[in-house]
Image 1: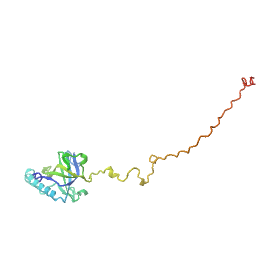
Image 2: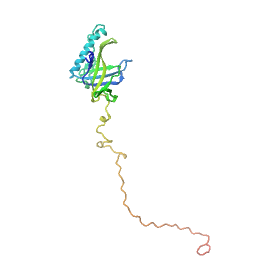
Image 3: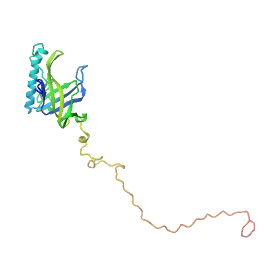
Image 4: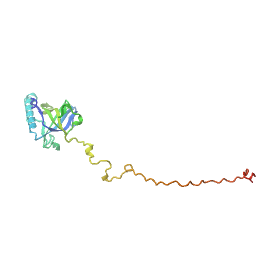
Length: 240
């Protein structure tokens, strides 16, 4: 119970996985026409006995309310509930991911966009870049009974999210910093790659020693061909 609502829970600190808090999402495996919703999966440490007890109590209260209101006065013999053992297997029979080990796993969703705030300022919503799978938070949940498509059970509605601290991202995308840590400038010297001329350090060619200029070279004259007519300017006589 939280804020006098018997089907509402405020969790202790848990880790977020499969986070879709800023944009509505629908799984590709969902039936055609499924409405996109905001959703998140919570990894609640098994050491947090208080949160688990609150969830169990709220689910039991929801079941008692759903019997007359949703299930025509008849309780299903095995009521599907939204909380699962992270050390077990999914409904499909596949094991949960490694990040789920040692945790209770519960998925909550809502049609309305939840508010995601930081613990340092609960009056200001966080930017999308500060919200990611792997961060730690406290979350408000509200349980409800359903009967749809021949199925009956208990669902978990998502309230709001209070980010408490950062954590290692659980998304499949690594940052460039982590991908290239320790590599430094290209090419790494220890890999023995040959350097191209552009990568080779410029070496200035040595300047020749200074030598004073020598005497000018003698002027070369070209002899004129002998003339066979005209007047000899020395003798005044015509050339023969």
